[in-house]
Image (cartoon, rainbow, N blue to C red):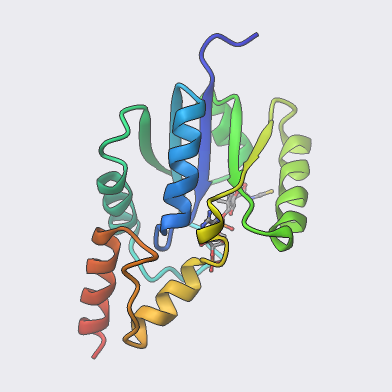
Length: 164
Ligand code: COA
């Protein structure tokens, strides 16, 4: 039995939503240490810079004392060992998430036999949220305040203003 379990929650967080925050809150209650790892995903065109994504995450988890925010590049399977993690956290919003997540969990376990993925379900109020949807709503002038933390809403408004 492991004494100190380190959980790792990776993602693009472009931007962080209340759904991600719900998963972070749940994981931080279950595990003594939670590392939220923000990736530069080369296949994705991010709206927010890595620095902005880190800042928004740090601000949003500032009251969760066992949560650390970091960034990483490269293979998650290697980073998992580098951080001495025991558990990978992923959120499952709906059955449609399952196929991709299942494939990724098994691929990661093939790459690294230590890999264990734990899936958490967000509150049902957040099952319809996605970062792309939030970005689209914000850039078209819609209200995102019920879907993202206040610091994210503020940044979305700034970007919309800059793009006008
Ligand atoms: N609430 C709201 N939205 C959620 C959510 C939740 N609880 N959980 C997932 N999402 C959404 C995100 O908003 C995002 O939406 P979008 O597609 O509209 O932007 C989408 O689900 C997926 O985002 P995310 O959870 O950030 O995952 P990702 O696919 O961007 O990144 C990594 C997943 C980081 C784990 C993966 O890219 C990775 O491992 N990268 C490293 C390279 C590597 O090792 N590759 C091999 C993997 S086998």
